[in-house]
Image (cartoon, rainbow, N blue to C red):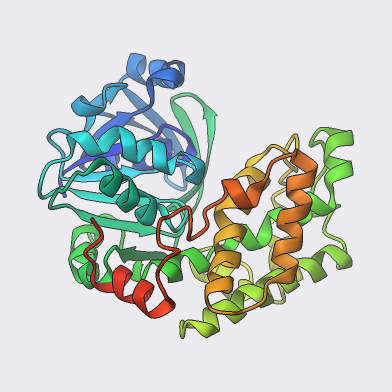
Length: 364
């Protein structure tokens, strides 16, 4: 993988582009035309400034563009680093220009590959590509300003899987030089279910709704808003997630173990892990209830967990209650808008048929 296209110029896109460029890869950065203003400073300076444990460095990029064909036509690997609610749109944008032999990987949240495969079927496009996803970004990063990014944490274990999973080893071989943290999962359902953000973010945001709206985000949600009752709800969400994980025969990793395993330096109880990492870093709440803690982590994190729970006959009443409450708070039907198995076009399959489909294919 020598030539790489990074699609999406958000926090993850900034970090991926800069880090990979400094490590010797030829990197193209793409953003949707309507967000052209976000990448104009990057194009003007020719790259991205990165702040990390090595100091402040400048990473020169090969191309910075809003033309998708230009971004991906000659690359080996395409990394899609956008929020889950943009997974489908980026699939629709790049699929017509794919070439046989390319590798396409979603970074950020599990389930993107199922979205991608569904769009390929709908567009009647058949290409010999290798498709994969990871359950998180390789970095925790925040944009300082367009063209400048701070990287706080590099992930220790990047839970990764191919769709279909029979291509796992091929995907591992394609990514191992880029990210030594790549850790293969059984299938795409396992990346979906090991979602720390789905456990961590929606419950405290919903339970602190009044405080968020009143303060407009000017309070420390993982310090001031992390009361014992809120911790109880987060724990109940994780217990339901683990019950679904168990039903599928995957390794059960409780949140307090999963969080440090991914890369955050914290150990202890669920409460200690959350308050140590987020509380200590002074992370403020979202500025409104339309922030990604709800609008991404609930419909694309909790909704698929509940949907898989229904398929496996595992009840998820706490998770479903949060989906209902968030829908009322924001006047959005998150169950209808979220990533259910029905939305992914696989609700007509039994559990055994679904497992065979995501393991062996064909997926388009």
